[in-house]
Image (cartoon, rainbow, N blue to C red; front, top):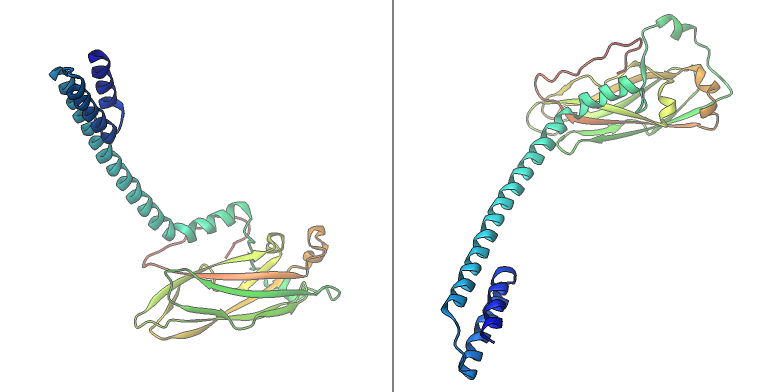
Length: 254
């Protein structure tokens, strides 16, 4: 009986919770009193020592894991903060290198625009949307909700931006075209995207977009049933000295 009690106490002291260990000790003392059995001091000492070791190990584990959680949390916060400023350049690099994201083309051939013939039997409805980053305080919206245009026909549209703050704010915009396949035929003659805009306190401006769809739009089999295109812009706050990277290619994306 004595040997069995001692083994149980040591086992529980190493592996079970404090409540179980306490229960075992009290049980041993009760049985020792009731049955006149003697409990070895060595057994109780080993139990107490094991209990203290367990608590020390747990404390070290808790301190170490608390430090790791704080370290990882801080690193994640810094990474998120850095990526918020890198989003615009990375987005442009991605669009320029892959052609995805509804990339439009900046027109430099004025002769092509002047001699272009509209496709009269095809009409496209362009819908405009606007958004701002959560850290951007501007009021930004399209002046018109939609326009109708034929491939090969130029169109002028506007967005309106206002700075309601009492200090100057620099902004920079990205754009997106849906469906993506339509983006390669959207040619911008003039656009405010990817160019830094500075608005003084309470200043409001109209931002123009002068564009057209290449006549080849009507010949693309992927777009035979696509008569609606979405053009959306998102403004971000631009920090002083922010420079967007530029990738050399045959056509310039804006």
